[in-house]
Every structure is written in structure tokens, then in C-alpha cells.
Length: 336
Image 1 (spheres, rainbow, N blue to C red):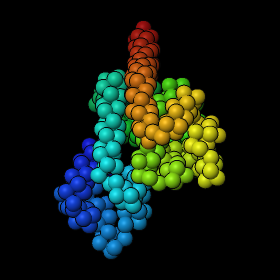
Image 2: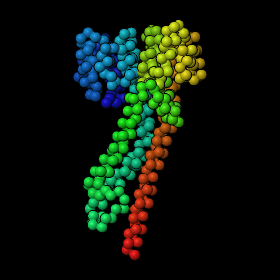
Image 3: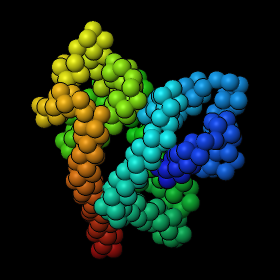
Image 4: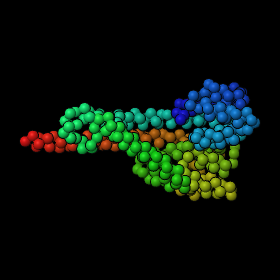
């Protein structure tokens, strides 16, 4: 999977190449050989589609695992001859994502590492028990799990890995099953996490809609592509009514108000931009402000994640201290 750094490198090369006047076929062939390693096979696929005389819109169908915002904007950039500008905006977008991820891990890395170390110490204790004569002959089991030695460690690690795998599979499975957006809506209701998600989703929507406005496409098409770029099924479902409303001749501001996705401040700024004829510029500023708000909320979420990791680590340590102490008292009683 491509990292934000890979996407930044990709779009910088695209921006430089398109501004230098290189054709898309030659440019993508170059990306397939000297672009980011994680994207070279995909770039080869895109190059083959372009070589057959088709466009980026058709090529994007074959790389469905690329971020929706990338697929949408590249197709629009080719159609409107604004590909260099869109590549520049995508560079800024992925730089923001990279900065946000670094911020999160700076806050949460150490507590999470301590949690992993606590789990590892338990595994080490299980392994050591397999080499103790008292544990093998007398049934000494201070942990009470019945796990000892290499075989016990293998079972323990399999259980831990299974729990992590099931949690991840359950989350992504729910997102796949509930296409109506109920999972996204549920996540948006979680304190702090929901606010962070809404800020970043609003930023992606505003940035995409700003770019659509600069390309000269109709606002109905712009709204559809901007909603696709959010990668949020709840927004896609609730935002559909705004597209039909604009198609019927409504302004953007009242159409967005129908969705219930935006607060009064957002709608007020959009309304001012629409009346002044500077809506794309206003949306671009809103996107920057939303990204900044999302970063601030991410800092809070990172603190809570760190505290949760601390709590889990403390609970694990306390649990096993109690078990070990109880085992120690039991051994004293047997001696007595």
C-alpha cells in the first residue's frame, strides 16, 4: 500500500512532467519505471490504458484501490486541462495527511509500545515456565492459563493475533456490509473521534469542490465528485439530495443546507462566497481551516489513545501481579 510520501513523490513528478509539456502516455511510462516503487505496477496499468487511446477516467476504473479523491480529481484534471494545478493540490493534501499521522504517532507511540511490551513480557513468562522443573513436574502455574513453554507461547501469540485480526476484520467488514453509511454515521457520533472525522471529511469535500469550481464544471457535477472524494458513505447518501437540487437550478448554499451535514458557519461562508463570485477561493480557505481544526482534534484523540493504552497496560500489569501474588501465597500455604 502506498504511503503519503509515495503519493507526494508521484504527484510532484506528475506536476513537473505536465508543466514541461510531456504527454500523458510518456509521463505514465516514466512513472511505471522510476516512480514510487509501491505504485509502479499501477502506473504500468494506467500507461497501458493511455497507450490504447483511452483517458485517465477509464484508467482510474482499473485502480479502484487508489484513494477516491485521487481517482476523481485526476480524471477531472485531464478533462479540464488543469492537471498540473490538481497535482499541486494533491501534493498539499498528502503532505497534510503525512503531518497528521506523524502528530498522532508522536503522541501515542510510547504508550502503545508499553502495551506491546507488557503483552510481550507475559509471553516471555509463559516461555520461561516451560523450562522450570517445578512447573513441569509439580503443576506450578502462576498465570493460571495452563500455558507453558514454546507450545504455550505459540497458543498465546495466536490468541493475541486472532483478537487483533478479528477487531480489524470486524471494522472493515461493517464498512463493507453497511453501504448506506450507518457505520460512518455511528463513528461520527463517537466523542472527539467523530469531530476529528467530520473536520477531515469536510476538508476533503471543500478542497475537491473548490478544485471543481476552478475547472469550470457545473456545480452539480462538482458536488457529485466532491462527495465521491470524501470516501464517506454517510455523506454520499445524505449529499445526493444537494446534487438533484442544484440540477434544478438551486444555488449551492441552500442545496448544501438540505443535507444537514454543515453547520451555520460553514453555510454562511459558502453563501458569502457564492454571492461575491469567489466561491472556489472561499472553499479553498474553508478546506485549510478544516484541516487545521482536524489536526487540533487529532491531538486530543491522540492523547485519549495514549491514555487508553496506559490504562490497558496498567490493567494487564495489575491483573498478573494479583495472579502471581495469589500463586505465591498458595505455595506458602502448601509449604506450611
